[in-house]
Amino acid sequence: MNHIKFQPFPVLLTERLTLRALEDADLPALFQLKNDPKVSKYTSKTVHTSLDETQAFMAKILSGIEKNESVYWVIENKADSTFLGTICLWNMDLDEEMADVGYELLPAFWKQNYMSEALEVVMNYSFNVLRLKKLGAVTSAGNLASIRLLERHHFTKNRELNDFDLTESGEKIPLIFYISKKGTHFN
Ligand SMILES: CC(C)(COP(=O)(O)OP(=O)(O)OC[C@H]1O[C@@H](n2cnc3c(N)ncnc32)[C@H](O)[C@@H]1OP(=O)(O)O)[C@@H](O)C(=O)NCCC(=O)NCCS
Image (cartoon, rainbow, N blue to C red):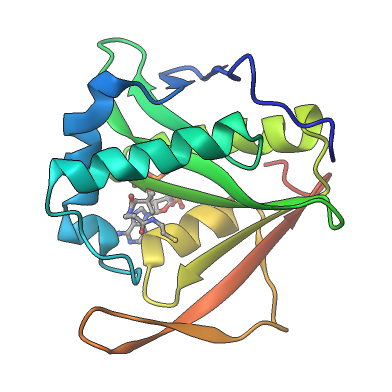
């Protein structure tokens, strides 16, 4: 998998969306996303409480891309360039030829099929351009939107893995590990 390079940045297009690189000008919108408790509800991630925190996060993301260790797209509405959310590939495993996918949208844009559209193009890119063999995703058992999204895209539960996340208040959330294999993801 050492053929993987994210320069030039892989801009991806769908019918309604542009998936593009993160830019400095995205800071306020990214902060809005990272500061929203509805978005982080099903994860152990703490909400960002300052722009500095989001700026440090952006630097980490950009460094991962520069080192070809991960890739992170801003999901933008093609028609008016509105920032809708993000989708990423991380946890790249060279031996397994696998990566994990992560995604989040601002709540105003939920349930409009946007993430389905974004995930579809990221799966095609992962399997056909990066030539990965598997994609993983971890979601909490209560995250019905994420579960439905993954199952619609033919991810299946990996029953061998069991773990849980902890919320900020120390509450345990069971996690579900999903996997999609190249050649089985078509609708
Ligand atoms: C998960 C998330 C990205 C889904 O994005 P979305 O654009 O709203 O999803 P889509 O509109 O493409 O919907 C995909 C499927 O999930 C279903 N769905 C969406 N929201 C749902 C909800 N709250 N409850 C149940 N099903 C839901 C849709 O009906 C659709 O199913 P269908 O294909 O049978 O019609 C979005 O809810 C989100 O950003 N959540 C917060 C961040 C998060 O939890 N990320 C995942 C961490 S693992």
